Structures are given as C-alpha cells and as structure tokens.
Image (tube, rainbow, N blue to C red; front, side):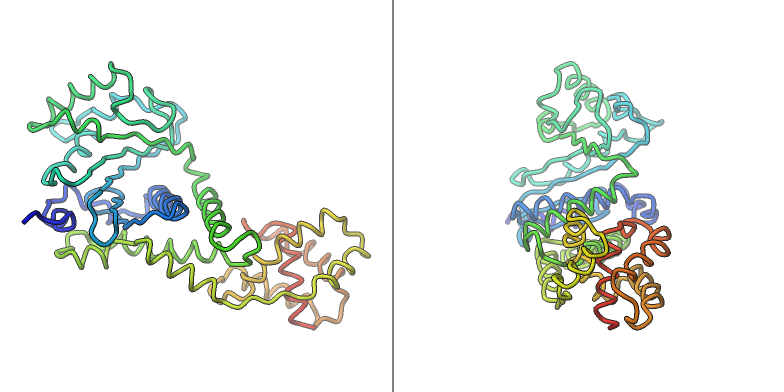
Length: 350
C-alpha cells in the first residue's frame, strides 16, 4: 500500500532543524507565508501550512489527505541588486548549495505526489524580474543549474528542474509588515464587505502569534502525523474559525449624524468628515478589543482629557489631536483614526 504524503514527510530525514531555534531572525519569511495563506484563502483554496519543517514553509493540499506539497525557501537581502545564479549554486567546502538543499526535498517522496520547490526572494534574479518556472528561463541559465546540480547531487534527476520555481515578492524587508496588514484588510473586505468594522490589526497579531508558536516548536519532536498537524501546522479551517470568532464580536457606534453636525459647525470639511466616517468601524472594533494594549493606552489618555464629557465634542477632538496625536506610533498616528477613537470615548463618557 502506498504511503500517504503525511507519512513520507514524517519518515523523511530533515536536512536541517536549526531554523526554529533562531526564528526571531526570520520575521520576513513568516510574514510572507502569512500573506500566501491570505491569498489562497481569498481564492477559496484549501491548504495546510507547516512552519520550519523540512524547509522554511511547506504548503500542503488538500488539507485532510494532501497529495500536493510545495517547499518554500525564503531569502532576503537589503541590496537592490538582482540575485546571481552563482550565489544559488555556490558551495562552501562540502556543504550543499542553496538549490542543492532545496532539491533534497525530492528525496524519499513518492512519484505519485505533486512536489514543487520554490525559492522566494524579495529582489529579482539575474535571469528573471518576476516569478518564473525554471523550465521557462533562458537555456543558458537552465543548463548551468543542471550542470551544477548534477555534480552536487549523486542521484540528481533532470526532470525535477521542471518543478523548481523562482518567486519574486518585490516587497522590501522594511515594508513587509505594512504589506501583510494590507493583504489582511483585503481578506476582510472579501469576507465581510467594505464596512465590516472589524479589528483587522488585532486579528493579524493573533494569527502571527500562532505562527510563531508553530514555527518555534522543535521539529525533532515531531514523530507522528498528529504531531505534525497539531504542533507545526496552520490550515484553512483554523483561519476560517478565527474569522468567524472575530466577526461575532458586537460592535456599537454613536449617532454619527449628531457627530458630523457638531464637527461641521466647528469647521470640519466634507473630506475630513468622510475620512472620519471611514475610520469609525475600525476605531469601534479597536475600542472594544480587550487584547489591544496600544489602543487601551490611547483610550486612557483620551479619558483623562474628556472630563466626563463636560467639554464640547469638537473641543475634545481638537485637544486630543494637539496633545496625543504627535505621540502615537503607526498605524494609530492617523488624524482621522484618532478622531474616530476620540468620538468613541466621548460617546461612552457622556
């Protein structure tokens, strides 16, 4: 009887397990994997993701009895120069090259399973400005890969080159966190509509903490399929459940007609009022989120200014902008967002 893909992954010796011990260095690869999960979720694709197990990230599908596996190796650089193929095939003494290590993922895997290895880079490659399969790159570069891997891997199969892919994210190290939050916002719009009023940032932090926990679990302790799924993986079902949980949280907003009327009399323009209106759902969600410590601190500062609602709303909003806005970190240092949060505090204090 043929072994399942799960069984093959468990029995297959891992080429390295040190990544989980130094995982704090790899925020980019975890965030990229999260973004890839979001993209697949928006496509209604089924997936199960293993972190730091045989490779940086491993995507399996379908999630219950997978027959497809994708091994992702993520490389980043602060340089804008394209990656050279020679850097990917270079060996230090007898150690395997980057591509050589990736091709070890083919060992011990049944030919009936679909296997791909993907090298992810935040910058372009010298042979490709965008994502590409190795079978579609220039013959000169493809032949060089074949030549180097043939000399490096005793049982190298040229056919596996067709299952090698190069993925260019185009997202810098510094921009990845903002990019991730943007992708999460797109998912929430897809799932709940434009005016969902849900706390996207809090949800991202929740999933990130779970990814870190899975990532940091010692791969050497994984002995069974159950260990792999429960200790190292996150799948579509878990994301669905987290979205259902956050969408069930109650949200309340003040009477915005009254708010807009007072602020308009105080000199707020139509554009300013529209920006405020856009920020209200997120501010309401953040205000009611007991786990959001950043917003909790902002709320405490606002409450100290509010004087139990004894000052006019427009004055309260203005004073908050002058005294609190300059001290706020991203993503809360937005004038319209602070005004929306100020309205929420005022609504509760009066």
